[in-house]
Length: 325
Image (cartoon, rainbow, N blue to C red; front, side, top):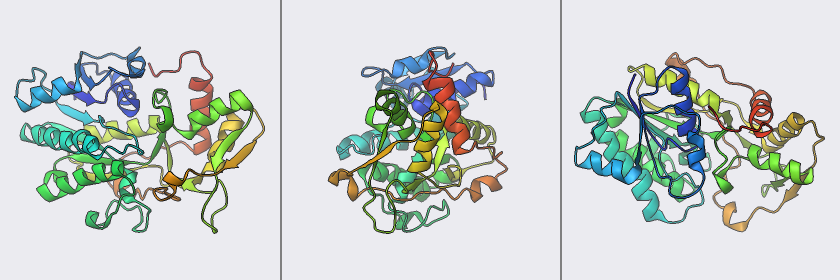
């Protein structure tokens, strides 16, 4: 696995995976991204890679079959990751059509292909969070989730899913998410709220049977994600669609208390009204069913929530150099 293309390679998970490749002694990497807006470029500092292409130039090279770089694998993390994006056409072009083109191109050339799906495809969780569920039964709650779900369906319908790997990421947090703005993790936001005010704000619950702050998520550390991704990429016999989470559901209260503990301050949490625009598309509980991935033999060494938050806060958010390098 000596030549790898990483799309979204300056983004959160993409740049973390380039860091992982570097740790494995791999630097013949083509990074594909769009650095025209924002501070994603900072995630490239300290990383080793061979070249960079803008995502549109890369796609044209793929469509015209003129790409000079001949990879052994493509790790496709490039997409619009905003769960509140309302431009459906934009999401369909960037998250669905782009992935269709790239997956077909890779499979025709026998190139290992791994792509990012999302836990957002599960919708409200009425059908559970098993990666063995009939995909046609899932109903995502937002357009972002639908754009990811539509490619999962296409890959299954076309037979591609037996030749590629899709990963349904749950709530990923950790270093290199600093450019994400409103889409940054609550760990990142809580750390800065604590520094500024000594307090953290969480959304109230709008369900009678769930207390404020007790909405739950499967929080997974980005370092653990890239370890699993590397193992999967290196095992060509493993294909299909898999959940990537810890398999545990923890509350927002748990998460924020872990941030307070890592900063050495007492917990002070205020509960605020959830914006009405979010209420219909809000997931109250998520927990990855990870049995299928475990059965592949993938090593399962995920940090506890408290361990992961402490590493992130102490070694990155509190440190002068925040980026993985």
